[in-house]
Amino acid sequence: MRERVDRVIRADAVLTPAGFVRGAVTITGGIVTAILPIDEPVETRPIADSGLSDGAATDIRLPSGRVLLPGLVDTHVHVNEPGRTDWEGFASATRAAAAGGVTTVIDMPLNSIPPTTTVSGLDLKRAAAGPQASVNVGFWGGAVPGNLGTLRELHSAGVFGFKAFLSPSGVEEFPALSSAELLAAAAEISAFGGLLLVHAEDPAELDAAPPATGRSYAGFLASRPPQAEASAIDRVIDAVRRTGVSAHILHLSAGAALPRLRAARAEGLPITVETCPHYLSFAAEQIPDGATAFKCCPPIRDAANRELLWAGLLDGTIDLVASDHSPATRELKLGHGGDFGLAWGGISGLELSLPAVWTAAGAAGIGLDRVIGWMSTATARFAGLTGKGIIRPGADADLVSFAPEESFTVDVGALQHKNPVSAFDGATLRGRVHGTWLAGALVHDTGAGNGITSPAASARPEHPPRGALLRRPAPTRPAPTP
Image (tube, rainbow, N blue to C red; front, side):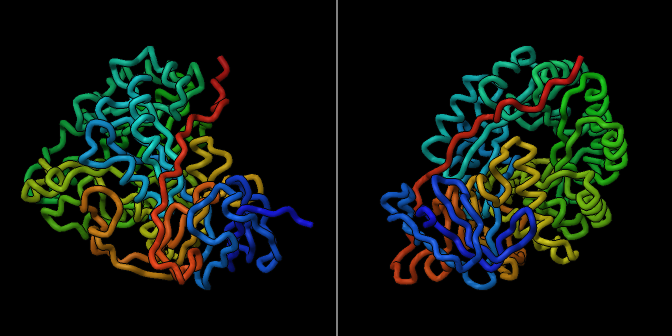
């Protein structure tokens, strides 16, 4: 007789490494134990014995039209706590993640105060996140002029890698690296087999461009030209070639930089690349003057550029898609009369990343399996989280019930992140998350009648924070051979 399990989730379409199958996913101890035929009898333990206690059924059949996906891993999220918790915080950000089917986020080292550039700063982050996290949380460290020579300490403390800016970050406590400092950081990180993440915009190119002032989106776009990204990426490629460091280009927006990245990859250089949902969804031609909710750096470029980014994803030059959720208060984003030179730059889209990318991909005939590959499987692999981003026996039971054909109009006031501002407000998106499980326990659901909770339930239960604080898996990427 088959052993009893904690939970079984049955769906007409379960995304597995072999593609979509009709199946029943069994879960015990937070781990997927089997994928059985959909109607296979399975005996579940009493919920009191399972440790789940989440108000959901133990034998769940998703309704027709729902698919079961691996939870997303978002490797680019600015939570901002401590220090700027009025912008965002771990409670609100991780609730938004769960509502969007994101079961793991990796927090950027800024815009918190202090930034995650020291072990003590990392400890403060962990202390803030621990009691509040609805999903798993890991942390990037920062590489700034003042902490070069001490990065191994942060690496040993479990950060996933080190983010650096080549141009001003926008906050004084996280200064950019000069060309010489970039090489020094690259050599230091290479020596212990770490990972360098780069916000790649060349400050000389930005200084030579006309400054962003006033309400004109075209004027803002001219202030951050594609050449600024291309030139900075050349500097990163040179640093990789000279030091052997593994490097990652954050939030690529300029399709013009793709040929040099293809050439670097063909050379065998260890460089990975991401882009973001807003670059794949919007185009400069759509953005009205004064619409500072769309301001981000690097900027959203024109429709032809957007198509280059999609081509880069499809041919593998771009490895993954991450949200770059970078929220701020409504006053900072919208309180300057639409002046792009004064508004804070950053898009709040954590909860909407999956439907946003799926909407654009589906319109182009790209399958949902490819989208999940970029937003879950590839991001988990990038972070070294081998148990995530996939549904198979032995993997973590981080799962999502998703209705790919269900459309909705975004109401920013109904989203879970802290401040009601988003470039996606009012957009009609395709695909809705109806349930999210973390290690087999329910952390988000849209209410009774969705196949997860009993229709007789009078109210949706509140799901307590269940997220774990993650450390960089060891061993990480091997150090280069001298």
